Image 1 (cartoon, rainbow, N blue to C red):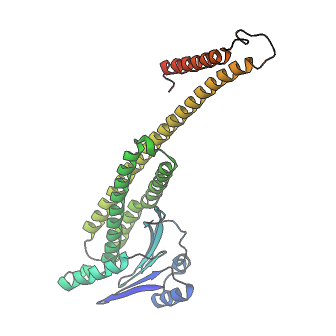
Image 2: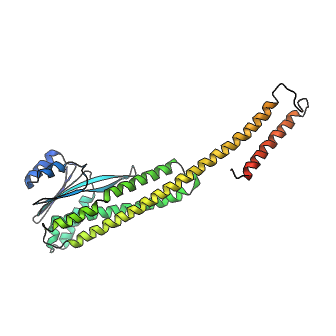
Image 3: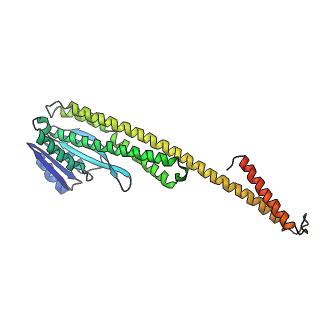
Length: 307
């Protein structure tokens, strides 16, 4: 579906979300786009890439999108076609960023439209990617805060449970996905910087440098949170194992104690002559012996620091 269309001067920006073939065909025909672009236009499974043609640039970039309910990131793929006087963007999922970018772009032009390069499709693409990166940085900040909370819970023995391990697994999965999504961006941006030289006469290097800086920053933070997540997972796994071993040790001790008590009581059920079996104090003596045996066993394991 068409999410929005913006025309400023001679430049037109059209944005679509997961469009159908009937919505795409008029655009392909209007701008006389290459047949390869037509094939890739609706394919959101294609990896990041950039193709440069005589009259336009086609690129595919993937960005992270967060599902608050599932606490998981997933891929939001964006296709962008840049001509000299138009830009077409297509995303696989709805993003609120597009509307905000369009509003901010209008406000920016209303304040100062003297800089001609701001009316170019490239500048619009810069604003889109820059906004996506800012959103990613905000999300990574929240990611780091969540890890701090998980770290506190990890060292709380009462909270080393399945829910904590599940949260860490989700965080680990998110960190891996974020790295897979963002890693190709540096190469794509570098190729885009070279390609735009043939399309735009303005010096746009400063904007590319800004995007490259943010890409490097995002990848650096992703590597940090990924390393922290893996460390926390290893720690929580070790603590859970220690807790399990402690429980098993206690159960083993009780099994040994019950085994001794069972053996003593079984002995006096046999049809053989045993000491004190005719004594009126037999039960009391047997009870005392069993209690002493249990106490000695517990003292022994306690001294060996088994529990």
